[in-house]
Length: 325
Image 1 (cartoon, rainbow, N blue to C red):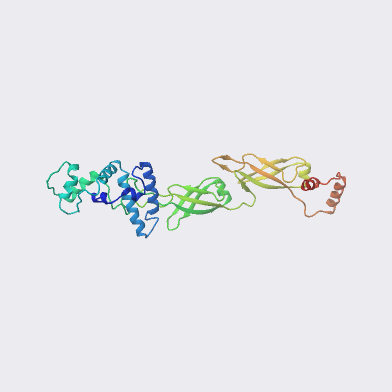
Image 2 (cartoon, rainbow, N blue to C red):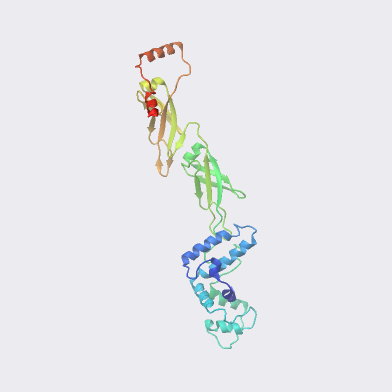
């Protein structure tokens, strides 16, 4: 960078920070602006590209403590100092920089291009243009690749057990991603390094994957638990019984029904739910009394006898009383 630029450009103003800004706050501000004006985020926008180069140039100087010190000293000299133009006579050049390089007086020195770069390379930190990002790469290093989003639909079993899914990114190559066990419907998974590659050798971006889980014909998920409706006969619920209850992806388990079990009661089977990093849930079996749709003549007669033998009571009496209260 020509030192004339240091006189003419207010790098603090370019970045929108005060002259006493800390290095940490400077870094945060630069990263925010770099993301906003990066060419990848503004394809075809010449103004954004120019702004990106401008903020990168400013950050390259201010983020380096030695360069920042030199810059502050030079700006403090004020606009009244002798100026020089590239390729001009060396009078102004020597007046300004004689003391800095140990020379002075009216000594005339001729610099070849390589010598000029050697002097200013050591003085200003060996920065350079022409990086792959299309602008001046500052002390912040290469830029991270752009983050991308994708979505996928999984079977219920795949979401519970986990699997490797093959995704086709828009305009990119297919990628394989590992779906963790226990992923829920609507959950977002952040996969580091699966986004777009960096334009200048930095780390790749991340992929945020939104998961949709298909419904299961038998089981429903409630957090880490699985719920299933288990039909039982009137006789089983009344007299008690041992029944089989299905499990997800495994053999049925036997469950004991106590005599007088009402419809809606939930029985718990430990450790047969969803396994995640937080642990393993349970299987919740909700009892549903199955009412027969057809009765034989004998069955109807026995049921009528049963009804007459039962004490007279209204099972809805308590419900009606509460509704009136």
